[in-house]
Length: 139
Ligand code: IDP
Ligand code: MG
Image (cartoon, rainbow, N blue to C red; front, side, top):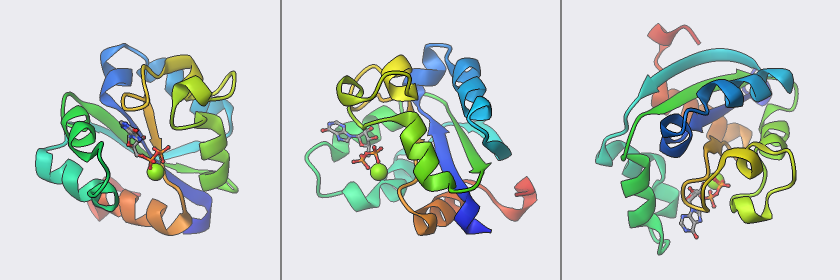
């Protein structure tokens, strides 16, 4: 089952700029089913834990500060080949390098404030989904 699932967050810039609806529209149009979804705001501890893999990177402090700066929408998505297809849909990390028509090309502000998260593997999709949702969220 995890093979067909990925995890996403609409990041603080996307929420702040009013792009939730447009981004969800693109996600649905690309054939993803929303399995679970909610709006929350990450604490510093949450963001540090979620991005722990990047803790040695020079941008880690900036990333944590940014991801805690406002509400996010997190969701679990389902589709055949979900992880890879969603990475294609969102585009490159740096919106300046993202392909035309991708979510980051259309809606991201910068390499840090890049509108959306997408899991990079099936294992991480399961870990990240379980970080944000519990069994009571019905996923
Ligand atoms: P990804 O989100 O495309 O998988 P990662 O390399 O996993 O990219 O980086 C995680 C997040 O960290 C990015 O989405 C972005 O928000 C932020 N980030 C990545 N590289 C930089 C950078 O060079 N400066 C500032 N923030 C960055
Ligand atoms: Mg990543």
